[in-house]
Length: 125
Image (cartoon, rainbow, N blue to C red; front, side):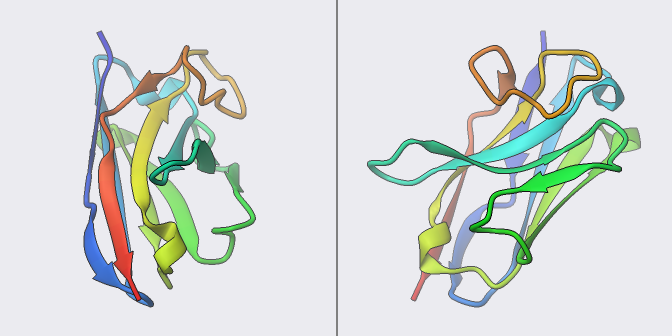
């Protein structure tokens, strides 16, 4: 059973930074790509960032490119999302996912993947 746990969310002001963490258990995450998505109130879940199993490849949505950085520490089974220059429109629940496929790229970030419960990020203006 794969368990995914996000942490690090909170209430910040515009321009501040946050670092989200995602720890997975029950699976050796070095074999899997991982990613972050977010869902704002009343909106669909949107892709934010993805990272390959080695960490050498990354992808970002246009809305966060240049402000957010995804990284991973496979020894700790953890993926991070460093968020700088936060804006009110970044307010959402942030979800982490472990891809369902060994060595798949990019992660599907669909219902077949393993998701956490999410962590709330609120950015005030």
